[in-house]
Image (cartoon, rainbow, N blue to C red; front, side, top):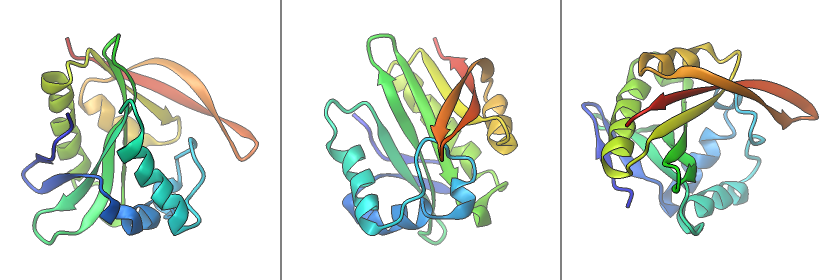
Length: 173
């Protein structure tokens, strides 16, 4: 159902068991975790293995993650993907993250354009939601660029605190 995708500068590689080390490095990184309030930073390779297993072995498959790989040098620079797929209603939530060194260079815009197209044309998604912490201005700018609008809000509870998130949505059909 999910396939590898390509943009001008990126290969969107389906997550695999060979990505455990990268996932550990990615999700133990302070920059990547700055606005992630849906899980704690990873503390071990074993936790990273659990994340990879979640994406590969959960049934039914209501989530997917791609690793962003730069074509020019094969470096893994981030991830993007879908989760919380409501197949009955055609609604899915998008998530993405990028290492600081590669931020603000258009990589995530390329990836988002491709996965939105994939969701529309191959998954028959009617609406994509993005759950974004209110202080994550770069992420808000990114989704607005693609026509997402604020449709609600909710709190994520982590570190014994509630963190306000805005829900941005785009209708595809």
